[in-house]
Length: 555
Ligand SMILES: Cc1cc2nc3c(=O)[nH]c(=O)nc-3n(C[C@H](O)[C@H](O)[C@H](O)COP(=O)(O)OP(=O)(O)OC[C@H]3O[C@@H](n4cnc5c(N)ncnc54)[C@H](O)[C@@H]3O)c2cc1C
Image 1: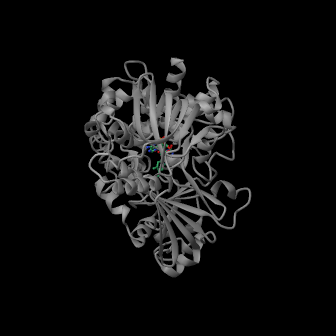
Image 2: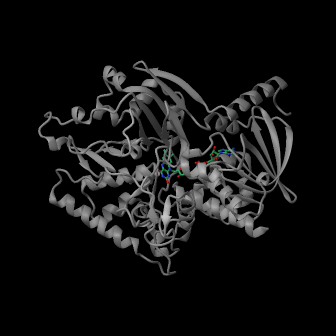
Image 3: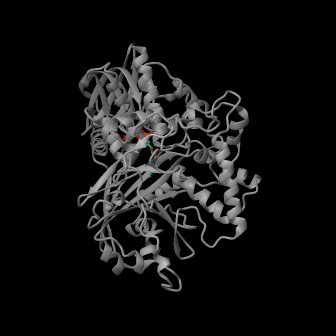
């Protein structure tokens, strides 16, 4: 071993073993409230970045396919391969990575489940056939899975009230601001949504939809794709959209889906948010979404059902003759997988540390997209907060209609830089209101350089993290006050996702490195939402499906 002593090696290998098996977790407390902080993948990422030497393989295992990563992309690939019947049970193995289920992970506190990341799925578009196939198998779609208006299971269609917005001291229904706005602002909104509706039907010169999910099926027409050359903010200004309430809403929407605001988001991606889906249901209104108490985790649980799972992290990948060798580190020991096919379903910034991607046409220095950092904060509540008492009208309670909008599934605060909070038990309330619940507060750090945020978050104090968690909840329920906070909050769990998702900044559509990985056809294939340049379930699962289909075609 070159350059380091045996002692240093043993120390670093032990640290790496620990990093690969334990989710990095800090136990803090604030206002006397216990706060658990998870930083999935962070220690391991640092170890890989620091080129920590790896132990030699202790075990060897032959498999036909190794899927490296257990997020939506990897899980979907495993599901497709299993469904094909082409492989025996132990011939396909999913390597979990530092966090099983990735961004679709979930937790449980006191028996109440909640998401640690992804929490909803819009009604799938006509082109998202792969998602419809999955939902039909799960019983989420009950009838007409590939038609214009499938019938969805009522338990999964988000119940009413779906969302609300706190604006000018009042809760209004829906998150598009309308309370107290003048006619000009409302007219701009109408014009914007009408324009987006017409974009839903826009078709390029190749006959394909201009905006489509999966993006891979969208038109290549340069006229439409040139929208990617400017920011969404610039496009909005060019089209005379100046109303502050509309611009706030669009900024919120981009931060909510992409982790970045309109000043950075590509105009193509901004329009895509509104124009790409258009999924409908026989038994729900347009724009409805599907959700579960644990967010999207049940989808991944289903995809991974009956699959062979190997805990650990891939730390080395090497193509060797007609096999691919993958070293997987777990509890300080390395297992070498000798495989016929590998699907690399981990984020590209991690892949770049364990394999030379330039041989596949991807140069990390040029082609890695910026990643947004997110904080997902879960509050286990002793009881539901009293909405009526705490509806924060400046002048105090004025009339019953001030409180007419009860707690919704998604609760957003106008002009906040945060993303509101979701009630994890919302779908259960109709059957029997539980005694307690979990509120999940979402925050994307979009105002600071991502690397600086990541460095700051790693060592952030309990007070700092709590402050971010409470950006919206503090004002709504008075939880900035320690006495009030302790009355309601049992415990808090915070998940810090330093490299949560690729940001679709202007120019993201024309990334030749990503295009090269999309086209791979050898023994090593890539599948992750990073291949789309924006992170949603339909895109991640699409690339898992594509990789699996390529393997099936090769056999
Ligand atoms: C806070 C947040 C909220 C979101 N909300 C939604 C939502 O509501 N709806 C929606 O559609 N999308 C949402 N998303 C987007 C979400 O990222 C995608 O839906 C999808 O889950 C991404 O899946 P993926 O497989 O591409 O990646 P990831 O989820 O990043 O999975 C990557 C996998 O690779 C593993 N891995 C990493 N390193 C290694 C290694 N060395 N070896 C092996 N494995 C490794 C990880 O452990 C993980 O299992 C959200 C994202 C975040 C961060």
